[in-house]
Every structure is written in structure tokens, then in C-alpha cells.
Image (cartoon, rainbow over all chains, first blue to last red; front, side, top):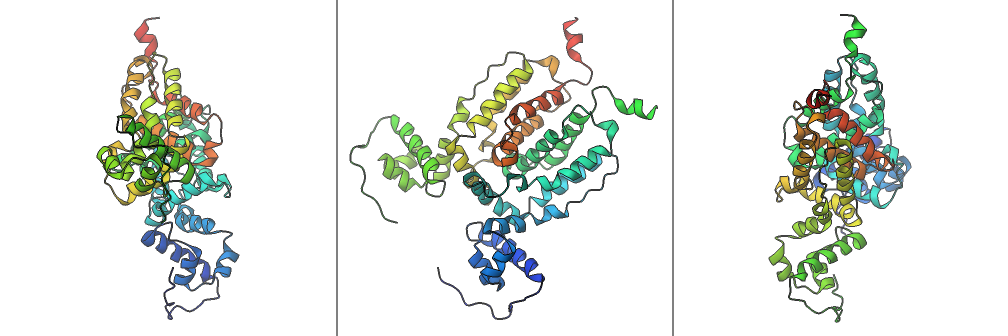
Amino acid sequence: MTIKPEPPSRGRPRDPSIDAMVLETTRELLSEEGFAATTVQEISRRSGVHPPAIYRRWPSRLALIEDAAFSDLGEVAVRPTGDLARDLRRFVRAYARALSGPAARAAMPGLVASHQSDATTPPEEWIHLSLRPQFYAILAAAPGDVDPDVDPDRVFDLVLGAVLAGILVPAIAQRRNHVDSAVELLVRLLRPAVPARRQATGS
Amino acid sequence: MTIKPEPPSRGRPRDPSIDAMVLETTRELLSEEGFAATTVQEISRRSGVHPPAIYRRWPSRLALIEDAAFSDLGEVAVRPTGDLARDLRRFVRAYARALSGPAARAAMPGLVASHQSDATTPPEEWIHLSLRPQFYAILAAAPGDVDPDVDPDRVFDLVLGAVLAGILVPAIAQRRNHVDSAVELLVRLLRPAVPARRQATGS
């Protein structure tokens, strides 16, 4: 592997923006060169941040890639309004969008392979757990539309599955309204067997 | 890349069992060495089948890997009994099992990456379509338990998503009863809003 000369313009920032720069470089590399080429050495070369400084911030290459590829998951913030269908639609759309960017798509197969062969990342941190609380809040805001007998945890697993299938299976991804159809089914699934809303509002 | 000497014992069979031998060798390679190492050259070396003979049977390395890794999908054969919950449980379990073997797991990330970067495989053939008809037959055998307003195609997408999530997301895979929980939700989802079974049987 040849090391190309470092672009002289960038310099070596020593401030907190190093994190942002490393993450951005990692996303660029993932999108442009793919998972295998996204090494700490190459991230260091492109960003001008030395490997020890990178490893001070992330325990491993995989942790850095996960952080960079799925950073949009941190931006998903759906404030529940009590309209279950609408809130879920916004939530699942934002969730799917956060996993559909070029860096996330490029990283996903490599991360899947790594998680299968080596369980160093705590499994709860892989992709989905950070968004569970928002899902629960959306359900809690529409109690009349949610059957208490349905385990929200398992419904969330279905949400995650629908999102993954929409990204990984071209035949599903190609349907424009895949997410909205899935949400429609989820709303139906959550609905109380005997319509409780009418009883609750007394109308 | 060095070419190791070919094991002399195997010979070069010229009969129809070549297909089976190539597929078996491909599965072995996937399980033992991983997706990247499963090249036509290496399959040829291990099986003793020349590359032209391999390419006469499969148009590409990826087509061969898909065929080998997901061959168990062809074994999924659930005959509907009319008991929706039971039939679906058998179906989804068999489906998940067929995608969970070591060769399928090893192939999945590489195939996902290939399908994302290059759409040479018709998208309808990737993983799931071959099993749709069985799913429809199961629903058709239990008409009283299936709301005609629910689009079975979209429910099948949820099945596929649940299966994929159970394989790709360790936090979900680790739950022993993940598949059964998903099936429970699917049965609930399919259920007619007003119980139609009682009307249909007249009991």
C-alpha cells in the first residue's frame, strides 16, 4: 500500500472539532471507497489526525465506523402529538432515512459481517436501541389506539425489520410507499381489539 | 495469489452430480473462508471442476453463491392445515432456519453489498420471492382468520423483515422466541376486525 503525500492545507487541528472532522472523513471514505477501504490509517491520512488521537476517541475502527455511519440516527427526534398514524409515519420515515444515506449503506454489510463473526460490540448498541424510547413515547401519547396486550418491544422489532428490509431487499426498497404501508399495518396491529377510543372519549 | 497443487484424489466428474459438488464446495468455502475468499478459482481448485464448466452452469460468481447459500430456501415446504397460527409458525421458523445456516450467514453481507452497488440480479429473485406463494397458500387455507382488507403482499414484507432482523440484529437474534413472537403479532394483524369466523361457520 503506497502512502500518498498528505495534503498540506489541512494541518492538524487540536480542538474538539477533531471529532467532527474524523467522523466526516470516515463518512466520505465509506461513501467513496467502501467499507474495506475505510481503515484508521486511511482516515488518518485524509483527515490529518494521527491514529493515536483517533484511538483516544474511539476504541476500534468498527466503533468509529458505526458512529460515523449511523450519526443521523441521533437526529431522529419525533415529538409525539397523539396522532398515532402520523407520528409513527414521521418516526419510521426518519428512521429509514437515517439508515439509507450513502455512508450507512456502505457500512451496513461490513458491520453485519463483523457482528456475525465477532461480538465485540454490545449487541444492544447495534443500530436500533437508541430509538426505542421515542417509539414508546409515541405509543404512550395515543393510549386509546394502543392495545395494552401488545408488547411494544416486539412491535418495535417489526419496525426495525421493516426498515431493514426496505434498505436491504431491492424488491421492497423499490416500492415508493413501502414505509407508509408498513406503518399502516403497524397501526392496525396496535389497535385495541374492541375500539377503546370511543369508550375513552365518550363520543 | 499462489495456486496450491490440486488434490489428485478427486478427479473430474463429468456427470450431473457436478452441480451438487460445486454447490457443496461453495457452501464449504463460504462457511470456512468467508464471502471474499469464495471465488470461482478457489471453488474450481477445491472441487476439481474447471471454471468454464462452472460458468456453463451459473452466469456469475454471485449467482452461484446465492444458489449455494440459499439452497435451503428450496426445502421450505409447509403444507397449509387451516390452523393459521400453527402454519405460520412452521413457515416462518423454516424460513428463518434456511437463512441462518453458516453459508447463508457468511454470504448475506457480501450479497447485500453487491446488490447495493450493482443491480445485475433481478431484484425479485433476491432471497424472498420464491416463498411468497407458500405464504399466500397458508392465508388462503384459513379465510376466517384473514381480513380481506389486509394486503398479504405487505404482510409478507413484514415477515421477511422479521426474519432478516432476527438474523442480522444480535439483540433480536438472542431472544429465543423471536420468531414465535413475530408470528403472534402477524396472526393478530391478519385477524378480521369483526370476527368473521363465527359468522362463516354459523356456530
